[in-house]
Amino acid sequence: MNLTRREKILAAATWLFGYYGFEKTTVDDIAERASISKGSVYLEFQNKEAILVAVVQQFTSQELERINKLVKEAKPPYLNVLRELLHGHVMSYWSIANGQLHSPEVIASANPAIMAEIINFQGAIFLQIAHLLEKAAAEKEIPPAQGSKNYFFQAELVCYLLAALFPPYDRLKARDPLSFNEATLRKYAESMIDMTLAGVRAGLG
Image (cartoon, rainbow, N blue to C red; front, side, top):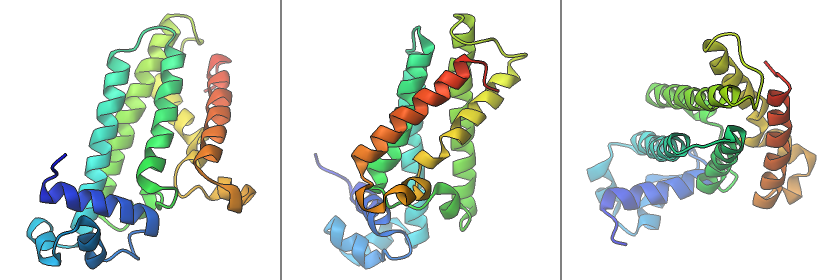
């Protein structure tokens, strides 16, 4: 596949930011990994921060496209669709970060543009989860909420309960730092998502 110069830069930056972190990555590193000159990087982006904003925007756009498609095509049982959505969301962060990416909130705190992107991204995900919860309630898979807004609050609670499954994975790494890897994350994700959805079935929130 022939990538444009911008696509090469974003692919290189995504890997480097994920593996080494934003602070340790330089524009020279990005240029080298993208196999282009440093000057070519600056023809596309003003600075490293602008590259980070573009990386985050690309990730959120692609992930929302995946989630929106999943929800649009959803059929009962809707909790199974929600399980797929949540598991895919957890692993999407790992796929771009290789387990080393700082949490979105930490990155966002240093850049208003990223903060706005993350807030909009999270809000859109909450809405889609709430949509699935409302459909699940209509199918009597879960107890009905008292009003449509409560499905949104339930969606927020579901994501809050699963926060440990997202970068920087401090709580999970603390259990066994040397053995934490993709397989470990998948195992924790399956268990924690199943427990969370069991709570939803029981009327959590």
